[in-house]
Amino acid sequence: MTDEAAMAAALEQARLAASIGEVPVGAVVVIDGEIVAARHNEREATIDPTAHAEVLALRDAAAVVGDWRLEGASLVVTLEPCPMCAGAALAARVSRVVFGAYDPKAGAAATLYNLLVDPRFNHNAEVIGGVREDECGALLTEFFSAHR
Amino acid sequence: MTDEAAMAAALEQARLAASIGEVPVGAVVVIDGEIVAARHNEREATIDPTAHAEVLALRDAAAVVGDWRLEGASLVVTLEPCPMCAGAALAARVSRVVFGAYDPKAGAAATLYNLLVDPRFNHNAEVIGGVREDECGALLTEFFSAHR
Image (tube, rainbow over all chains, first blue to last red; front, side, top):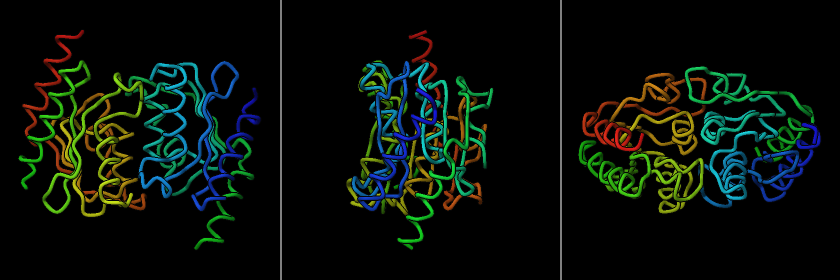
């Protein structure tokens, strides 16, 4: 599965989030070319500050695999991960993080910090940003222009 | 409730973690002088890479309060938060983060990063490190000397 195809699935999740009034961010976890988890932000619905798409997808993927170590996995998400989510990717030991839109306000995988490639941590992940960037960013722009 | 008293409760959680073979880290959330959530690391038991004490305590606290915004809350944890957990504290908008032992390998609230006081984020938290540091650190040292 290409990163673009995985991002299409993440975008579908983001659209689902928007449809229930959640900030439209979606994420999938890909292992051996298959999507094993697909989630969207549900912070409002679950009253859970940690319910970002990435955290939920990583938790689901670990449950599917039966191991909290997701070595070899790719986390594919529509928005650049925040510190919590970049840290969650490290905690889950994913091999790659692919994101769509860059986040100038909280991006911790390229923009404000590069947490995933800091050699001082016990794990690092390859980072690929800007995949289907325009589509990913447009969803957020539309959402906030409608809700603010 | 003093930070030292809250840390005693976090230490009790850390001991519970050790008793079931989990890395001994405990965390509590204090609001208006009362402990509203107390959890320990349960990454192995739940096969969840995000099941650090802080994430679990913040989720519980939000459920208790009925709001993912924990403004005014203190997160009190035996070990300096990793990037995921420091980021979770920001995502939950806690006002203070109090920790015991410094973490030279992954500390993101003082040692390797100062994520909680970065003015570029939409939220910051006061950070107090080294509370009951020796007791907090000793639990970890004992655990790893027994398990490695």
